[in-house]
Length: 226
Image 1 (spheres, rainbow, N blue to C red):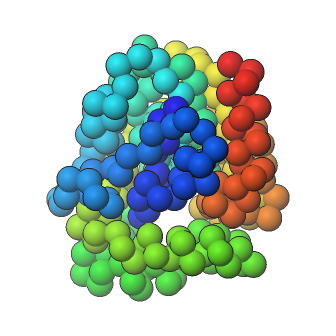
Image 2 (image 1 turned 90 degrees about the vertical axis):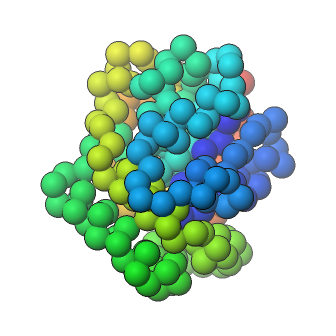
């Protein structure tokens, strides 16, 4: 299983899953200890980078931006995808308005650094009361390289709509979402063609950290069914 982190995080967001599963969790280009990035990192670049980690069909598990990277990987390399686990993500392309918002955010991250954004969105990333997860999430966001995070935002602004490619090459697909997620609410993730949908109550955008035991059990059951 290949675990793909979201924005603006790094591979450590998957620590509870790495403790449970035989999986690989890389840092994406521009994040963590991976190759630096600036300007724009298109989604296909992230997907192409992941091909270095697998040469046979694998299970891709991605959260938020990581889910979009997983769907881009599936769009480009369907023969390398055994199944998808997509958490708190959307398959839709950006609207004209949301595209501009993402580009403005990229410029803001470069201009201001990560701290203002990180503190602004922390309690949307995790639901209030999930203090242990919040501490980890804030640390990841503050440590994210601003140029790399901005480059990814610009790449996401121009991503395609993945619904047609998911339908054209169907694979078993588990969709997971936090009940309190305002970034990708339940009606948004329901647009993804899925074999199964699971809602994690009391979690926001990062159910794998907020409710790791439940998240892991749902993933384990899905893998057993493959």
